[in-house]
Amino acid sequence: MFKHISALVLFLCLFLASPSVVASSFFDPAVNYAVGDDPKGIIAADIDGDGDMDVTTCNYESNNVSVLKNNGDGVFENAVNYNCGEASWGISGGDFDGDNDFDLAVTNLMDNTISILLNDGSGIFAEPVSYAVDYAPTSLVGAKLNEDNYWDLAVATGGANTISILLANGDGSFANAVIYPSISAPWTIDAADIDSDGDNDVVVAGIDGPVKIYFNDGSGSLTGGQEFGDYHGGAFSIADIDRDNDLDIVQGFHYVDGQGDIFYNYFNDGNGVISGGSFFEPYYFDDNMFLLLYEHDCDGDNDVIISCEGGVSVMENNGIGGFGTPVPYTAGAGANAMCAADFNGDGITDVAVANEDDNNVSILINQGGLNTANCGDVNNSGEINIFDITYLITFLYLDGPAPVCW
Image 1 (cartoon, rainbow, N blue to C red):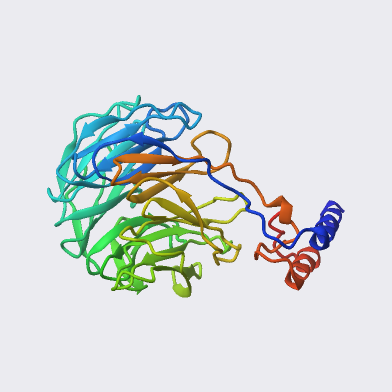
Image 2: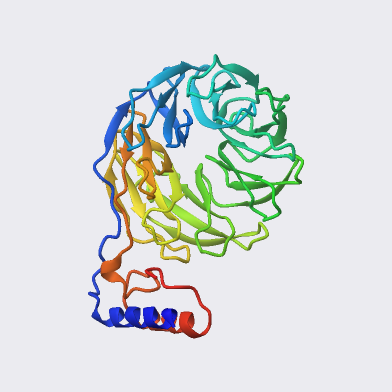
């Protein structure tokens, strides 16, 4: 009964609501925090074990990481810096030594190494310990790749056209890197269960090549799988974008002439087979190629945020993996890598942006919520039309998906 009464309210709303689309969420003006020189990578994690999300960058020119501790309300303390190797480029982390706190891992582009910085539990880090990988490591990801429940590492080594896998020993140390051939100039890397078999697979994208999936057999041994996408596509992000409970991929790339920058959505069939979707043109990316999928507007699907010179642009998901008109927000000069987390504890996802030219981080606090002013748009298409009635009838009588403002 409640379902039908509530749906009737939505049905009336369909005809009474204004056809104009009202912005459903927004960021407060950016608050900037100084970090090291030329920040290239950024992550959000609870560094000091106090239950809120802190921010850490790795800084290419100053060869260090900068830790910004959160006071719990989205306001951060001044950065504390820790040395790494030469040309710190990518950052990730995990509990590498089994003591239930978050340790750091950083790629050192010019050293051909990664640095491990172990956390004492309070957010203070030990001196870095280095491990050799293949030539010119760019990005890395911490993930559990085998059955021992330890956090391992996958590293994109762009200068060698390979990836390096380092399995953890559980005490903060790692086995020697295992090298796998890859695409041309692998640049970004991530790990997720792409084929729904219960283990983390590895996905890599190259600045001169496509996206490539490596399927994990559960032991941390990888088999090269599908390749898809286009050239100059070093940016990608993994999340469910069409509400079918598997992990899809969005890839952004430049054309060769530097114009017409676009991104593609690619859909997963649930078994790790990826098919091409549509392309979207947010606007000119300048020289930065970073995008991120996250829940921006509290409607239950993952939206996309794209960094560009001086700011970011948010494109909201229509619920089936299509993306709407870009909405720009100001960050800093040279906005590049981003991370998303709830920084102020209000249950809404915020964003942090590394600004490589300003040597700082922009914190964008999200004051979002559902677009209740346009609840007649029950299929979240951006328009109120006959398809909303069809959607509502399917929900009521054919067990279809609930309206997005349900």
